[in-house]
Each structure stands twice: as structure tokens, then as C-alpha cells.
Length: 149
Length: 60
Figure 1 (spheres, rainbow over the protein chains, first blue to last red):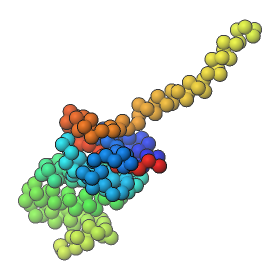
Figure 2 (figure 1 turned 60 degrees about the horizontal axis):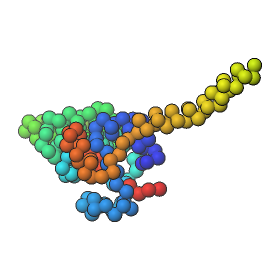
Figure 3 (figure 1 turned 90 degrees about the horizontal axis):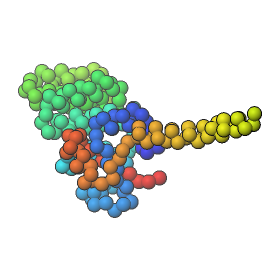
Figure 4 (figure 1 turned 90 degrees about the vertical axis):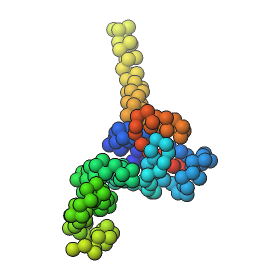
């Protein structure tokens, strides 16, 4: 990450714009290692201002997957906080802006959930999920919605 | 002639070093400014309303 992804200008700009970045060396014996149950590196977490964890992933990602993953993380954070309007906008952005990224089908899945939570309109959910079957039929997320018609 | 050309040559010789220094400055201002303590990150997160991106890493 430190030699490929973080030096990438798009990644740098994205992080500077959207986050307060914090790096902890796992050899430092920081108490954060146990607090956040870290057993492997890299471990990337998205936290709110009080340190509550909302999203995490492990392992190296190149810039063109790293940014969509962070975008998804922001969408999931909004969804978990029940900020559905913000969550829907963020998750739709992932699908629209990074349609071929590995996280696009997952973003589409949770976009449907967010729309349903916001409106209680089942059609919004089903339409979003049908789009997974159409656009990402090979993904695990298509399997998760394979019961719908 | 040599009297006039020496300062010019001196300046010319410094250009590569100046370029290195300037490129380092440029790199620093465009790099990610990582916080190194949780307390500082929380404080800045509260002030800016931005979430914290926490990266646990192993030095290579």
C-alpha cells in the first residue's frame, strides 16, 4: 500500500478530501491493535469521530479498487447510521462511477436496501436487485437476490 | 571572460540540486498527512466532521 496505492495521486487526493488519515504501525504495540482486533496487515477501517468502527477490509488493493472500496465504506457508514438519503446517493455513486469495480454489485445490493429503508417501497428494492441480476449475474450478490423474479 | 562565466557556471551546477529539493517539497505538500496518534485523529475528525481512515500496517 505504501509503495503503490498511497503514492498514487488520485488516492492521495481522495483521502485528503474525505478522511482524517491515521496510520498505526503494528510493531508499535499500540492498544488500538487489540481494540480493533487486528490480526493481519493491511487492515483498513473507517471510523466516526468517536472511534466507532463502521467498515473494514483487509489486504492490498491497487488504486482503481481502493477508491471504490472506500466509497462503498462511506455508503455503508451512512446506511448503518440510518442516514438513508446520504447512503443512497453514496452507494449509487459507487455503481455509476465504478461500474466495473469489484464492489459495484455489493454497492447495488445495499443501494436497494437503502432505498427501501428510506421509502418502504418494495419496488425500489426489487428494481435495484434486479439490476444486479442483469449487470452482475456472476457475482455472489446475484446469488443473494436469485430468489426474486 | 572566465571572471564573468564562473558565477554563471556555479549557478548552472546548482540546478540539479535545486530540482531535487523542489521536487521533494512538491511531493511533501501533495502526500497524505498521516496522523500518528488516535487522539489527534479524533480531534481533527471532530473539528472537520470527516471520518477517520485507520490503516494498520507493517513496515517493509
